[in-house]
Length: 465
Image 1 (spheres, rainbow, N blue to C red):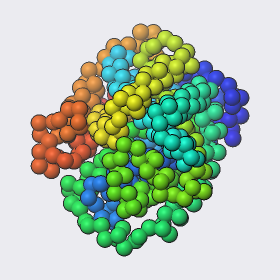
Image 2 (cartoon, rainbow, N blue to C red; image 1 turned 90 degrees about the vertical axis):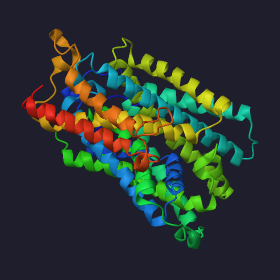
Image 3 (cartoon, rainbow, N blue to C red; image 1 turned 180 degrees about the horizontal axis):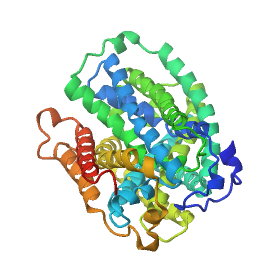
Image 4 (cartoon, rainbow, N blue to C red; image 1 turned 120 degrees about the vertical axis):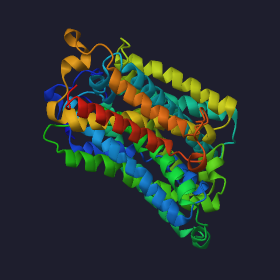
């Protein structure tokens, strides 16, 4: 693969948030297919399927909710265009919209989101590895969980330090290996499911059940990942068409995720407590025969490593974008320490996993949706025609060092409106009543409000910034 040949695969990356030199923009769309495929071939996708059913939906409604939720990956495909054009990370490109100082706010939130996701991935990977050891005959214990955390966390940190060449190489292999295992498990579950019970699931409300399920899946998939789209497309060749990049990103992400959520929907009939389980990973392993559970959990652990690497890699880029003057390898190390502390708290102190997880997704999604509306509209109306100015990206010659107040206000307005109608678990909006009481429709509210507000601003400024 051309991108892998650019440097040695097992070499620590030093590019950071600098613009990728033209000579190194040799990536092909197929590389993005493997990156985003491996990023979504994780056992957490099965849990997503269980979460959908937990909203009281029928089988058909659950399938439709899964399809609608993963359609949010269109946002990732679109932000990837900006990476090819601007040749740097997503939140660095965001500087031209908000100004270097103004961009600190959305970048900080993006960093927190990625750190939270990384913590979720480390927790999930640790539980998966612990479930693997249990399937091999070891008893559940605190030392076993601690050992699993050290092993999984250490592997994630090492791979993240090696950078994007290693990530692309690993993603291509893990997509194939874990993808094959996933197909085997799906076929096993399909032939061992009581379909009469699955098809007998009662229908739920389209407004108070279906829409909230879609919004939670969208928050955890496309909306959460759109902030990293350009991070992996910045090495794409200028010859790569936007249509091919979009198809590679969306196809790579959606194909495995839909399969995994389908599996989770079927498993919910056998495991009614799957969505609320303190250790859903071990519960999933318990319904598989040992000859299948061990290789599947082994492959699942490897798959989650690649997902965790993406979050940690992008989080380190955001830390650099904030102006922290360190090498990327040190930024990865700083992020890793924070993440391990969060994982230790959840695994050994709080003991609750799914509750905070869903609340975190919804809370972050409100802010991210508002930012994505502005970023996508700015690319469409401005950057696609005029490109990204290097002086504005890095504050060269004193340019763009301050705050662009109007775009920042549009972002904050959208997020505030979304929070007003959302119960997140962190902040419960005063208008989260009626249709909004038990839904996550605030995600759509925040996106549309910011889109409309920023669109008015661009219209009045003649599409110039």
